[in-house]
Amino acid sequence: MPPAPSVAGPAQELHVIAALHAIGADLGEAVQVTRRDGSLVVEATGLTTGRAQQVREAIAPIPGVNLRFDVPDAMPMNPAPPGRIATAAGVRTQWKPFWAKKV
Image (cartoon, rainbow, N blue to C red; front, side, top):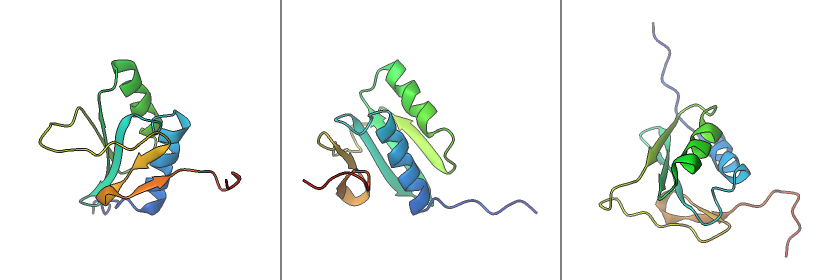
């Protein structure tokens, strides 16, 4: 009996966002994290080959993540402003470690 397919949940999404933040991919680059059909999708456009490899390596250890580069124009992305990560349904959250001081 094959194992049940894993469904990406909030924990995996947070791991992806943290991994992208660790390499600075959430700082003004067109990188978007969404949930589709039970998995997470990371879409990136306009990245150099080297930068795309960095993104690929950062999220590779996280299960249930699909990576797509150079999204066609037919699928508009709303890039996040610097310091923010574009998330599903256009909701934009600012990533701050819990220990960061509030300004």
